[in-house]
Structure formats: structure tokens, C-alpha cells
Length: 101
Image (cartoon, rainbow, N blue to C red; front, top):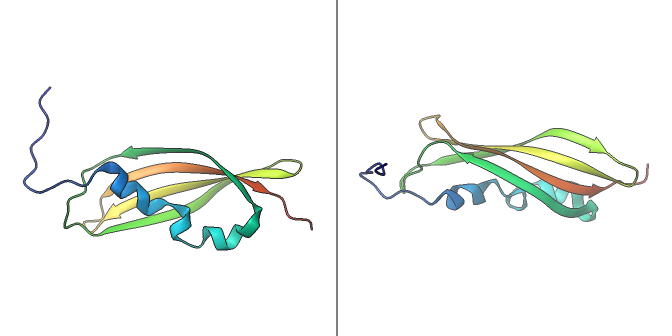
């Protein structure tokens, strides 16, 4: 199957994905030293992102699964372009140490 031709340079998917990194936002400041580890990440690249596009990443907490001493936080990631087209969607999961009450 032939590849589609693009009139402009296309950003690599990981160049778009990196904008959803929680470390680039407030997440590390909210969980502080409670962060134990990064568990998993998945993404779907839905449309091409071109070199002159403006992109708008967002993270939303969509699931909290408590355990005895740790819990799993699931973040849903989305990236829209300036035409309000969804170009990336995915999830990220983190293991968080529960803080004493």
C-alpha cells in the first residue's frame, strides 16, 4: 500500500506525544515524592501534525485505583491542533504511594 504524500514536513509521532508528558505540567508538583513509578503508556496517532501546526495537549485524571499502600492513577491524554482536530489520544498509568491521612 503506498504511503500518503504530504505537502509539508510531518512531525514524528513521538514529537507530538512528548507534549503529554506529565513532567511538563503540574502533575509532579501535585504528587510530589508520592510518585513510585511509571507503569504504562499507550497512544493512538489519529492525524498528522505538520511543522507549522499549533498543538494543545491536555491530561485528565480518569481513574484512581487504591491499594493497601499504593494506588494507580490513570491519566487520559489528548492533543488537538489549531483546527480543533484530535491528533492524538492515549492513556498513562502511574503508581502512587498513598499518603497517611
